[in-house]
Amino acid sequence: MASAGATGHGHAGMQGHPLGVQPEHFRSLLGDENSTRTKGLGSLHVLGDEVLLQILDVLSPEELGQLACVSKAFYCFANHEDVWKGIVLQCDDETQWVYHEMGWKATYVKSILGKKEYSQHGVRVKHMYSDVLYQPWMCARLDIDEAWLETENIDRRSGLSMEEFIAEYESRNKPVILTDVASAWPACRTWDREYLEKVFGDKHVIVGDRPMKFSSYVQYCDRQRDEYPLYLFDKTFCDTVNELKSAYSVPKYFEDDLFSVLGEDARPDYRWLIYGPYKSGSTFHKDPNATSAWNAVIFGKKKWIMYPPDVLPPGVRQSEDGADVSSPVSLMEWMLSFYDLRDCEGFKPLECVLQKGEVLFVPRGWWHMALNVEETCAITQNYVSVRNLKHVLDFLQSPHASVLVSGVATEEEKISLHTRFLNALEEKHPSVLEVLREESRKKRHKSETQDKLVKCFHSTKESQSQQQTSFSFSFL
Image 1 (tube, helix red, strand yellow):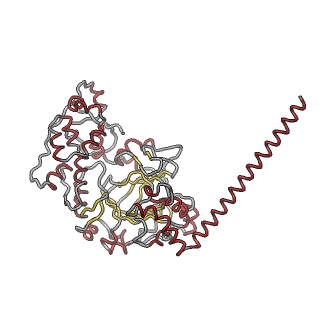
Image 2 (tube, one colour):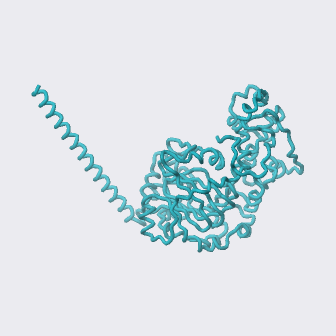
């Protein structure tokens, strides 16, 4: 975790934490012998702050209110904004709430409980030190450092032929920014927030993993001060607002999408509208099912950081089967903690700020994160071409397919996706599979030939060694 007292990053009039919480290292700097935490938590003080918050996550709002009355320490934990954010977001889909500018607890009290009065003026606790409670508040108020936006080391190309794109980028699994394929789209000429508000209105979109009225989400974007703002990532936007589909087209470099043989209803999710406020975005991940992707900025700007498949980004941890990825809670926390340490295993990450009208090719398996430098809207699609088909098929039949495969509704669909995809390819594109089989036969033959050469080499060396040993002994 970054030093909670980090400086040097712009912030507008940042004042102290509203509950009086201070970063952990202030205790030693101030020589403070008192500890509100130790006294107030009793025997629970031996637990880490993260563990305590996990316990609080299972409490009801009423129980949190009671806990806040036990001690000043519990008061700080029970009023932590992220706890109340979780409570609001866990409400069933039918619960309509409107974000309140005073925060998530205020949203629960005023929007869900329907209370007219809510006072934000609470107790400011002295001698309460906690990075876990302080850090989210601080990150929410820091601005993006301009130095984070300076590096531009991803190729920008225009006028690429299909053959050049395949040879120089897709076959080499290398990112590239295409500057001349989206700028002429109607979307890039006409879409802005006002237009999206007009066409979506009160229609539901997917924010995080739950439906939300677009009008409510825009209101949230204007009012929020979250460390990690909610992010609109909607896979049904073309069905929700049909006219959006005609406002863009798939660039020619990505039209070869073999997952289309399954049909729209049976293929994994692949197309999303992405929209979010300043400092929203996505933390480090790899795209699903070993697919490649393209990402086009319609308006706004996105900071991208990318690592190749075999280089794990600093601060990111992955389970052995690849199913679970853990990283700092927010993009700002990662930037504060790890950006200056971003060179990893001798590799300098690829970076850019993707501008309006630009399209980024995201190759199979690359780790990437994206941070919105301003309010930003983008379209992204994942696809399977002939060049990455083998990797996708291998991924779909992995031993952990029931966990790793994504974009389909049930475990049965995950497990059967490989067979269904293979059968559809056999029916509609048998020549593509024959090319793969021929390449596999050639690789197998080459491997067998190399094995024979290695065995022959070792056999020859052993024979020479025996002759030399025999000669040596006879000489002696």
